[in-house]
Each structure stands twice: as C-alpha cells, then as structure tokens.
Image (cartoon, rainbow, N blue to C red):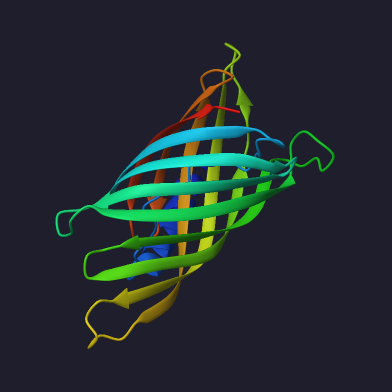
Length: 212
C-alpha cells in the first residue's frame, strides 16, 4: 500500500507540475542545493550540466554570508537545436530556517530564499525573479560518506522581452520543482544528480568543491 501511495503521489505531482509549466521557459541552472548552509566565510566552486529542453553548461560560486545564509553567483551557456549558444547569469540566496542539528531542531533541514536569472534565446530574452523553498535530509553511510535527498519548489515571475518591436513583452507567474540527491564523497568534494520540471524539463548533473 505504501508503494502504491507513493507512486500515486509522485504521479499527481508530476501531472500538476507539467500543467503549471506547460507555457513557461524555466531555468537553465537547475538547483544543485540542499537546505543546509555552508557556514560563515565558507565557499564552494561548482560545475554542472543540464540535459533538458535547453542544454546548459553551468558554473557557480557559493559563499557563506552568515551561519545560516548562503549567497550564490551563477553563469551558464545555454543551447538547443533552434538557438545559437547564449549566455545566462543568475544569483540566489537561501536562509536556513530548520536544521536536524542545531538550535532550531526539526525533522529535516528547510531553507527559504530568492533568486534572479537572465538569459537570451536569440530573438527574445528571459528574466526570472522568484522565491524558493528547499527541503533536505542528510543520511550517514557506513563508509563515513553522506547522501542527502533534497527537493526545491519555486514560484517566480517570468518576463519575456522580444526583439521584434511588433511583439508585446509578456510576464507570467510560474512554478517549478527540482528533486535530487547530493553525495558527499569527501570533505571537499560533492556530486549532485537531479530532475527538474519547470518548463525546461530534464535532468541535471553537477559537482562542487570547497575552496574556502
């Protein structure tokens, strides 16, 4: 019964998400983030690959702004069969509200944040501005490594500006989902794998390295 319930719940989420994201552009950056923050003064450099409606190559730098807040800068090359390779930029932050270890003990880690992204699609540009809710839970393995399943829900304003002056700009409220796993290989190296449903649907793979 539990398997049937879980499969039914996942199917409902996917159907609802697809109906919301049918007309949206989505993000080329993926999520690549659990709810846990780095800590004050800590920094990571990340690389990623998005195999979605738009193929993207991603680089990022995340910095711990405080004990419970991270800020991240992102850059991407975006490509598909229709457009030439274009550049995208973005930034986001998250504040950790609940931790499985810490003052605000909870059943899982949870963070709230915001993000902004901009990229070009040849004959129009896309600007995203929204908020995000991230949940995750760390699982300790017997070999001292750790895996952390995570999920992100985002709600955002998508603004499309067309190069053709005969076409009016568009702005729409959209939502998206990411779900994946972070694998802590060592104290300095982490791998990510996730799927995304937000209009730019597909799978994303990445890694990050502690550099500060």
